[in-house]
Length: 123
Image (cartoon, rainbow, N blue to C red):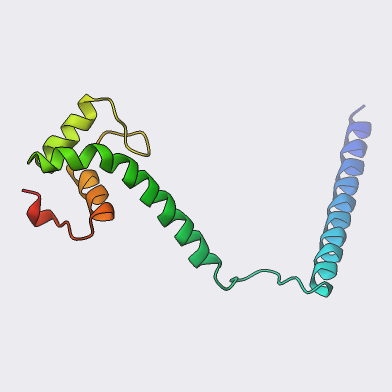
């Protein structure tokens, strides 16, 4: 019985190796066909990083604008960044990532919607 188990394991190993070779050949063939069609493969794509950063910036701007509707009136009432953060937490409003507000997060929202805002004015 032991010999047949060893034999089966050997057969499975050979089959697995053959499958790996076939996958490799199919991948190489597909990449060669894509290259012939003029598709650029691998490496840095010009503008890709900039596009991704612009997308993230737009999303952050949208979120900041949403939170600014609550934060700006509180700031105009003369509340400190820490007090605003505490108020947001009391109201049950989570940050974008679902966490609690801190003064620095409030400051970042204000920086994004009011570039002239600086932390020295915050106190």
